[in-house]
Image 1 (cartoon, rainbow, N blue to C red):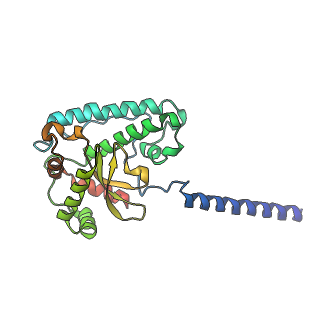
Image 2 (image 1 turned 135 degrees about the vertical axis):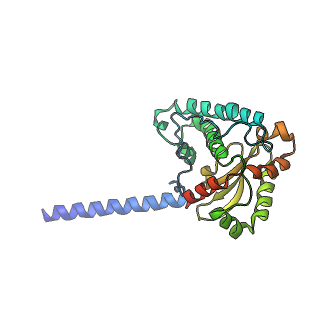
Length: 248
């Protein structure tokens, strides 16, 4: 009996060692995704829903016009939601997951819906944040924790705006410009193509601006730098501070 117990203990110990070695190796290779600092929004992907704008279409004028807001939200964002739902409904194992979870593990998704979820899940997540981090009578100097982050990491607000705007202007074609918190806890300004979300590369989006032409072309035509500069007048620093706190 004692021999049987000793044998079982040895076997269990060997299994645990093998499991720990496998987990460590997979982590080092990146096969096991490192978690984000916090949930970005907890958006459900089954089904995804288009939330109403938190303000009127014309509330951000003169910086973003009412017609742009109407088309951007009711047509473009709505299309991402519809197509994301169509993709998720094809595979029952994807239902019940958040958009963040899907985008954080793209390689594990069924190949026939991977691109659709990347594009439309990213579009849904990005735009949901975008509407929230703007508000009427916004803008001004950053305050609270985000002001500290900007001052300590980018040399002050004016230098931060210049770097952020330049990254947005330099994005070739369509995409986004972001302030993100990376996996090491640092802060970076990055840009992503198309509707790619920062969560796809393990970073947490604190704030971002849409540099697709549909975000500004009716009012600004091809003057993207002018749009980027005007956008700071509608930034919602309170919401950005909330997102920053969630990233901690």
